[in-house]
Image (cartoon, rainbow, N blue to C red; front, side, top):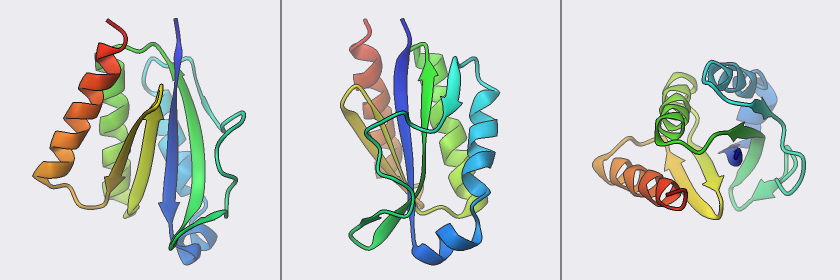
Length: 126
């Protein structure tokens, strides 16, 4: 049974206007995994250019995949690599109500939170 992983990139208005290609690069990277589909969300996500506090939604992707630990770890790694390459500051991943907010800082606390998120998501599938 497939599940849906929501990925929402947050940033500042000038980033959204000047670099719309960034999310397409993430989409292409995610398609390299053995996923069923990667594309815009069908419903429920904030529309592009909507604002949330000081950040705005740069874009959102919905990844339909088998909920296996290796695939989820691969998707998380791709998102982290993409953030490092593009300088993206915040990305929110959510699957079955489990939410993980990654910031541009790759510290020990963030790695621990990502590991806990992966454990919670995969435990729900066992």
